[in-house]
Image 1 (cartoon, helix red, strand yellow):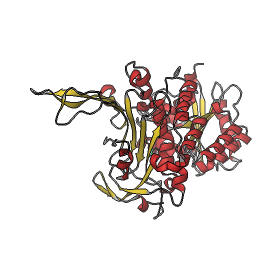
Image 2: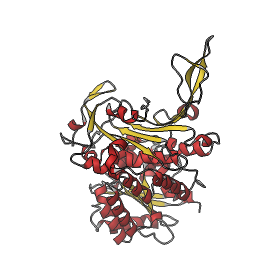
Image 3: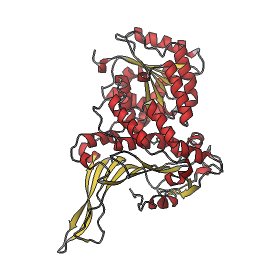
Image 4: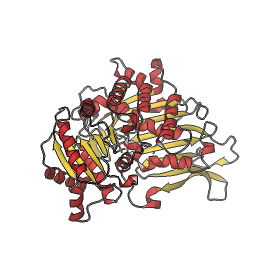
Length: 497
Ligand code: BG6
């Protein structure tokens, strides 16, 4: 049987939560509607809230109406999908829930042909991971049923520092083998993030330039215009470093900095990313301020609307020291990148929502032309991850006129214009990969631990009572003014995407 035709059951813990409603069910529906979800399948949703199968189906129908890319073309198609949804109420901390899940699985498997393939999805708050993993282990559900596979997908945060990440790793290892564990980082499922690898390794012309001889600096920006919204309580415990930097931005850095893998498979790709992590120069605990900067949004205006400061948000302490902006300066100490600074920044309530990677090349060694009114910029390659996905290269050109004057122009490729339509959601790709057993776009345990280890000195310094300053910035700005001085130390400046 081809892998794409394998039946499966997906068991979602945290099925009454936001992630299930906004991301998982809409993604599963879109895969089904696009006829790429292997069949037959059963989705066993579980959460503490008491609900019947039908109530869960109604709820899911509403979630799809609100969040899915595609809508059911007819009631009959919807009914067919809805029939595969089963709800089991129960507390994931209660061992008594697991025999009931096992029962639901047996029922589903008895009603269809093919092997008993099972995927567990932890979409709960991380405080429940311990119980879920332990209960899956002791109930025997973590072991693959004969002839089938069993996998577990877990959502970040994978711990909150190096020690807790290791503890989580150990706990997972008690119940599962590493090949069964899929740690999701939804950035890796974004089409444009996957395109970084295609761009680098399917085109011959960039790779010879992709090194210290030609690249002067790399800037990674993941800016959000939203604030913490309803997640104040979670965010207070996380902050920008844990919420975005430890995972999404460091993953992007690895995709930019890694060596070509021998093949596009989970082993080689993740090995190369790990090598980058090992090459990043450790942050000196005595010099954290040179490597990291933090900020917190104050009231301001975003898209013309007045918005409160972070400390005024619901669930946030009025004297909170949690950072909503973080910037890092990292060096990758290997032959390819020695001496090239990598600047990473992320924040909430910034001027606009934009994620991009900008690779600035060295200037020409000797300029024979006079500069035009706008000057000549160094060639910069910008990979726009969202929105307005695409790739642009800034080059110098002659501006029209009798004089030989120069100005920058952009060679611009826009996804939307070229391919049209909306790209699939990251969760669609990642769920499908987990079902097919492809972990290439998932984070591996050793990578996660290394990322925590790297950020350890910053986490310690920022967690200390007398830590480095927390710079306020106006909501709707590009971050704290101190961020400009932070990058200017090397003679650089942040881009204004
Ligand atoms: C999540 C963070 O991982 O990523 C959120 O927890 C953040 O705080 C989100 O808003 C951003 O994702 P995206 O796909 O909207 O860029």
